[in-house]
Length: 198
Image (cartoon, rainbow, N blue to C red; front, side, top):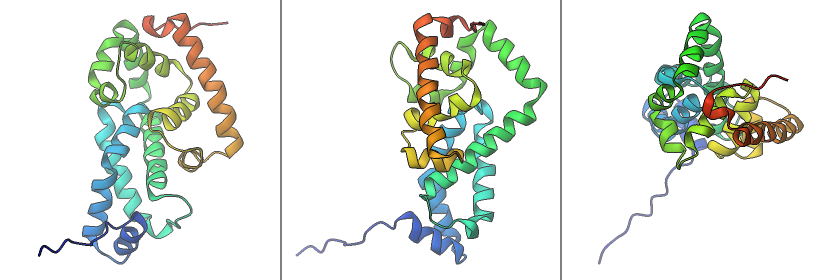
């Protein structure tokens, strides 16, 4: 007679409690569970080749702040909020380098798309380059809400937590950002890297 294991995988809250009690293996399990989401978030929010550094810093900060996690949201959305903040910090610290990257991308938009292998796996089909180009042309907050809701498939509540915005702001910005994104895709400006001024 064969005996089957009835072991049930631990949920994140149980693992967080163990990590808070000093169990490093528990925190390593959280890292293993959420590395792919954290990496995808950093890449889609514009970290590019710095995504690894961003998520490493986010996991270190999350560990240090673990006592402050109150369980009001999922651990995943709490962690992705830290990743989003670290990505914003990266954007601020890039300074002049950002201008150079944007000019290079405008000259050869395919070079940045090729750099982001995660973008390539997240976006499929012939409209991938147009969609990526359009996302890059959106203002940062519009890009963030689109990435959260549609590319990371976060719920509205998780998006509220991750971005730290009121629910009404998430709803209205999502609606406006989709209109802008559709406009860019319909106009074909995303493929040429041009921005309409008007």
